Image (cartoon, rainbow, N blue to C red; front, top):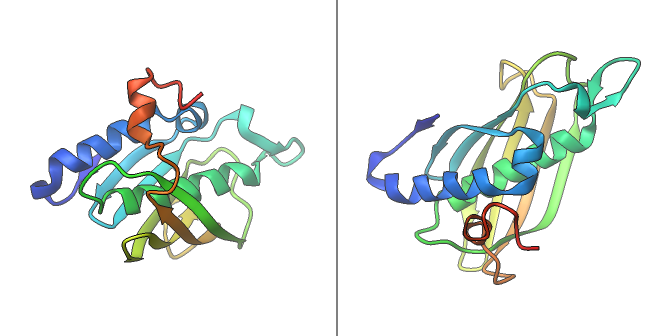
Amino acid sequence: MVVQDERRLPNLARVVASFAKLPHTQFLGMRCDEIGPARAMLSVPYQDRLIGNCRTGVLHGGVITALLDTVGWLAIAALLPEATAIATLDLRIDYLRPAQPGQTIRATARCTKITSSIAFARGVAFHEREDEPIAQLTGTYMLGSTGFTADQAAISGGTGPC
């Protein structure tokens, strides 16, 4: 994993640790490949158990949706000075082409605007090149909305809020 902007290292390390404890990131095998203020890159290695079409071997679209939603969240969390609950308000995913069987899916996102209560992110999912996207994300997220932060997953031993 590459961490950009060493002045923010303690906060970014906390964000990555929180990300790694989330049950869905563990189940899907998500990896944080890069993080910096307002930007993140995640990946999900190809796994047979995530196939959505048995004839073609293409991964289920829900894997891509979860990856894009999570990378949007991570890009926003990397900007916040302390642990803050972040809830997805609106998530638009445009599927542009099928993922290729056997290949890792990567996703990048950037926080495009942040206010005291709302943040916006845009991103893409791809295999090797961002300019050849599989899907694109436009997301709106509420800040401080639920009282639950990803850090609480870490406190509960990585089992999440339940």
